[in-house]
Length: 237
Image (cartoon, rainbow, N blue to C red; front, side, top):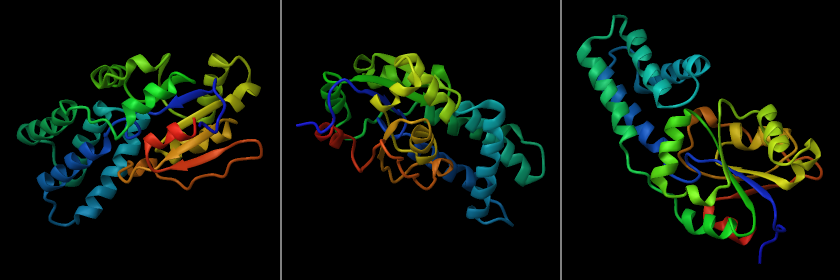
């Protein structure tokens, strides 16, 4: 039997919570490092530069494959010290195309769990990135029917979570009936807790390095649950 009473609002992350995502970017990054084949910097040093370039690019372009592609192009030029040739540009764009064309691979138990949860709670997909990209992934996933709403936001911070509570709850004090469920401490868990929501941290071994952070503790009156599989939500909700 569920431990949490029915009628909760569950905000559920998409990438690496419902389906695999970052593993495909990691493969592209490995191929990019091989393509660059830098004579002075080690692969780890190249990756560190790329991480920094990605942070810079996100500030300009937001999240999504277009931002990642721009970061690869910029990083290549920065480390090679020369303008990007057409051959290298084409090969980098091909790495991005391969990610875009990747089949949606649902994580174990996702569809069955969403089907069960949707009979007891209100489910809202809440993710960052390009609206077109995320909508296309959701459509290909076959999961859209389980969600009463979809929110693609520019950033997941405390202010955004408070806005979600006001939009779907009516007042800030309704946050106790909201849960954020996702794999990112930085975006899914810590800011949701800061906004007064409850949270479920779903560990994923391949979470994007820019989403790593130490989990904050839940304040009095809040709950933070840690799980290692999406399917385990059924025993709680």
